[in-house]
Length: 354
Image: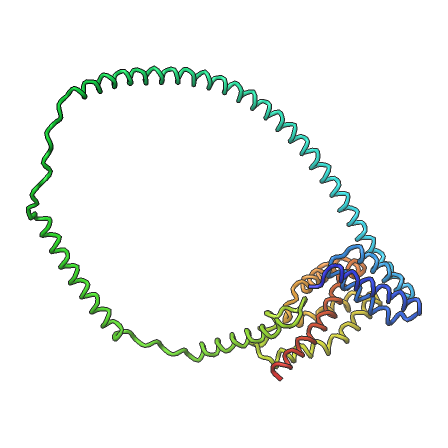
């Protein structure tokens, strides 16, 4: 896992390189570094860096002659700034409310403690008075008992010793002894019977049935999926889910590699169509381009990206393109990063399965 400090360093280096290339009027090469900085800032949820990247994006679009897209990037930066300001104000209000509630709680607690102390003092006084009365009564009873015991001891000393008691008793054979012997014999017979059953039981047991063809096939599929999942788990993945991709075509290596290669081959054309639609402000073309990505995203397990596409499709019926672009940019960045992960997955499967 990359630390926040390393992410911040990557963003700064990408922004510096993009600014340098823009100063040299190499806008085409600067776009790649801006995309990289935007991707790192979005994944790490670094709002301050995201604001800077959007502002630089606006300058880039102005330099290449896209004032509408530049305005959209500026609006995205303004929205993030407004949300941060609102969050800061809400935190200040919450801290002030918590301070006021803490002061009120302390006042109430002090009042309750003072009342409790008064009641405890009065109860202690009452309990001390009661304790004095009880102790005086106990002392009087003890004195009476001592006087009575002193007189009894004097009388016991004057009495002669009593005769010794003969404790030797005869032990005749009773009916209970006979019943105990009968019970022991019955228990021994039952134990022998149980031992015979234990010896005969293994011979009666039936042999287990061999697994059917369907069970064998399910076992093979399960083993193949586990094997593919373990291989893909060795690749550093963020967007693609190894356990979901391993279930494609019952865990067969060749169809999975074909899917990955097809995605990497089709993605540049889909991205170009999507970028042209964004530049021309064509809502239907944007939706059609996103529709072509769904098959791959479902097979990769990229549920969060699918949720973004669903939100875009729902709001496209009532909203303008400008309101959808921030999420369209997120989908575009996710798909580009997924292409890098797909390339690593394909190389890993080729190295294992040939």
